[in-house]
Image (tube, rainbow, N blue to C red; front, side, top):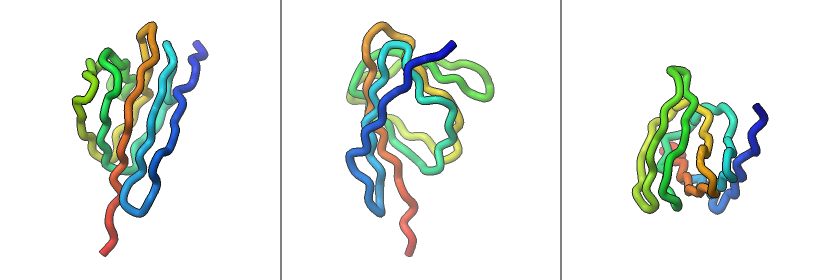
Length: 98
């Protein structure tokens, strides 16, 4: 089944972080990807997201304004199973080189 694509808008990209707003239309997806950095997600919408993972599907219930952290290496496809747009901000943390 072909799903609409989630729309990323990079807001900040510097030596420390990449901040991206993700907008998911109903049924929208990111496509399979592997995170190359540690990251924090700040939901702007309350509701479920469906995660297709190597270990099978997982539904995460997100709450607007309640952030969560994930470590480098996460692999998944993120899907909006809802009937309304879903939005979150992703902050990818770049490793500081000293």
